[in-house]
Image (cartoon, rainbow, N blue to C red; front, side):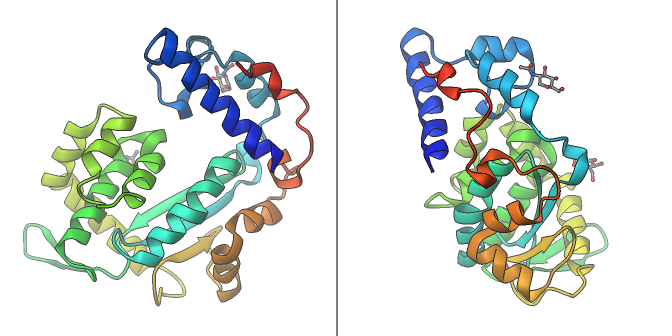
Length: 254
Ligand SMILES: *[C@@H]1O[C@H](CO)[C@@H](O)[C@H](O)[C@H]1NC(C)=O
Ligand SMILES: *[C@@H]1O[C@H](CO)[C@@H](O)[C@H](O)[C@H]1NC(C)=O
């Protein structure tokens, strides 16, 4: 628990510090450790060096968490916002997330385009498609954008501000949604959802390393964090064990 608090404190204080001197370092937070130059500009070199040195070898055995969902289903939003995203924030070095917006939608083909009908109406179909486009186009900030939308008052109206908060790609997203790419991406999601074994009976439908069982679903719903920690086969990161990190992160307090 202390670690969560300290980590949050480091980030808060860096934001606050920057807001006095210059607006910000000009990179989304999740990219701060991408290169030494960015880390330097954002004032997090020590944190990134430490993180890079201690981060597990991803290829090794990351836990794959799949979420088959639809954009306006209340249970999906609760799981994504309160379990999946916070778990990913803490454990992103040992887990991969695959989001598949489609859920209980239905598709038909009119000879030119796929047509979709959604459980929660047309707004949901639009929300699904925006999120499919976000996943295809925005790379490492896709999940924060989708979290932003799903946790907002109005999923669809929040799309543009959420995309703009994390990237400059709204034009591309809008083009995707209105054009053939969005239609094609939703069709791919229909195929992926239709290919589930066992077939999904409800949403949110969770797969772990490609597998779905009642037991895994129930464990994911009650504490995805513990499930991912317990399934990870490599050395457990400090977030899982509560161990003291090797380097004192207070070194990067402001
Ligand atoms: C962290 O590691 C990545 C991949 O090895 C490297 O590209 C990046 O420059 C490193 N970041 C820092 C801040 O050293
Ligand atoms: C985006 O979608 C296109 C068309 O299906 C595909 O070729 C491409 O690999 C996708 N890109 C990503 C990053 O998923």
